[in-house]
Each structure stands twice: as C-alpha cells, then as structure tokens.
Length: 418
Image (cartoon, rainbow, N blue to C red; front, side, top):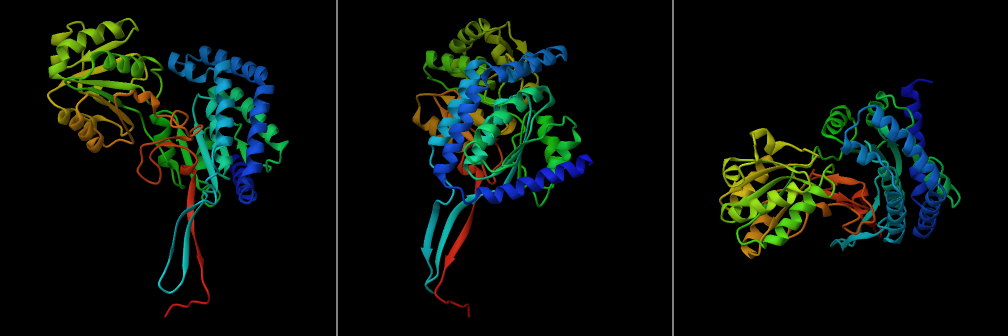
C-alpha cells in the first residue's frame, strides 16, 4: 500500500471514529480521560526511556539547546501532562451546550448549539507533551485526532500516544479516535493536509517554516501562528522593581517558547533609570541586549540593533531594546513589527493601560504581567491545542470551546415559508 493510500485509510478511520464520539456522554469521556492519565503514570519509566533515545539522537544531530529543551521529558513534565489531563476531565464539556435561543414571529424555535468540528489534524515539532495535550482536548470535545509529530521526537510521541490509547481503550475509547502517524516521511504531512472530506481542520504547532509550509500545501482549513514576536513596554512612571521582574521572567524563564518577549520598549522618561538596571539584571542571566541609538547611549555596552532585529523571534537569550517617546509610539511599533501574539505594558497610568489594551492588535494583551501566561493551562483551560494569531475562528490560546463549531436546531409545528 502506498503512503497516499495509508493516509487516506487513516483519514477514513478518523472520520468513522468521529461519528462514534458524538453520542458519548461527558461522564464516559471523563472516565476515559482519567484512565489515560493513569496509564501515563504507569508507563512513566518507559516514556522517559523513549525520550532518552530521542535526546541522544537530537544531540548527535546538532539540535539547538532551545530545541533540546522543548524535546526533553522530565518527571515534572510528565506530572504536567497527567495534571493537564485531570484538569481537562474536570472541565465542563462544551459539546451540546446552548449558545443562544430565540423564537421567530412565525413560532419557529431556533437554538444555536456547540458541536464537534469532526476530525482535527495536529502537526507539531519537538515538544512531546503536545501529543497528550492535543489528544485529550480533541477527545473531550468529541473530535477524532490525527497526530503527526516531528522525527526528532518519534520515540517519545509513540510512547505517550500508546499510553493514551491503551488507557482510554480500557474504559471504552472508540478505536481510531486517536491516531499517531508513525512514519517520518515528510510527504505524510502533505497527504494529511490534503485529506479534504476526511480532515476538517489542521493545526500546525512549531517554527515559522513548518507553519508556512503546511499553510501553502493545505486543502483544508488551517489555524496557525507563524511566530511569537512578543513585546514588553515599560511606561514612564512604571514601578521599577515590577518592570524588572516582569522583563526577567518574560525573557529568561524559557526563552525558547513563543510567548517569551523578543523586544523591550521603554519610555524615554524611564529609560535613564530603567535600562542600566535591566542590563545588570539580565546580564546575570546571560542575555545579550541589542539596542537602538538612544538605548546604547544609556548602556554603551549594548550591541547595535538593526531593523531586522525588530522582526526577529530569537527563541534565545537575546533581547532587542528600543527607546520610544510615548505609549502611542510603543503601540505603533508593536503593530508594525509584532506578530499579533502577546504584548504587555507596565504602567500605573490608567489612560496608558486603556490605550494599550484597546489599540494593540494582538491576541493577548497584558497590563503589569508577564507574557509567559499566554498558555491554555495558565488560562484555566486545562491544556491547550495551540495559540492562534488568526482572527477566524479562534484567537489566542485554544482550549475546549475553540475545538467546537456550532449548528442550528430548528423546532417547528408545521410552518412553511410563503
């Protein structure tokens, strides 16, 4: 059987499974989810052993430190997957919930109700925990899921998927509701995103090159974000210690993720005090600062920033720094160079806060908090299927509701249209 035929068969099995998922009650789905979590715990050592193989091969292949960090499975990350599944099980099932209801003058009762999307394809790189997050969120919303991870995590993804499938099967998980594409042939991605009629939605998670390639090849809808060029703006009169703490967290806690800041903007009235303190604090963390002329005049040791730096997603301990004359200038910079992901302001000024929240065109906008909170788990979604910088149909961290669509239920008593 050819790869094309294999992928068509996977798609058809997923389509069939999606129809078996629709009538499952929330209680049944939650029992299946808890069984998945228990099986992950039971297979903890096997998962770590599979990940060790991937880590060794990744080092030999020359993967960057940021990529290796994404690939690594620790006991804490397994704990996170388990807690994420348990949290999803505890959340209210959106399927079948009523969005709205109204009655027309002719007596027709119209109900707008949440329903599953159907079959969701997830294409992702490096992070094996995406296997668990994606599978459980899709299952909770009665969607069949087809998972295609990167070759660098092939063993880790298989170990996690096998645990989820076996644990779920013990409590009645429909066959083929969760499928992992196990070939590392890149053509499998092209085949998956062209399964029109069998796959309803594709969500790519990874670097910009992957997401653009998926978008260009796809024959089915794609929800995406190309990159995370996130900003922190420190306004005049901001609380110094708060701004330093937020900047350090947003840049240094995990620099290789999409919600870490890549550019810091600072009001010219605050720059003289703030930038030397920032340089000292981030210097202890090994951060390289690249500044414009005004920033380098205050901190001469900074490297010179070029225009390309304002567009750059470093995913590393590098931070571009620019001094701006006003909150409006900061907003203009973000809307020009940003990626509509996550941006933050530190200020005590209510007018500045409101202008920033209103005018920054991003999926998630913060006041006096780190951009690192842009995450489904941190938002109380249990886990996330991804982060969208699109505007249709989902934006920002995507949880259960974003994995649903809706249909209209219309009740009549013999009405006919004249």
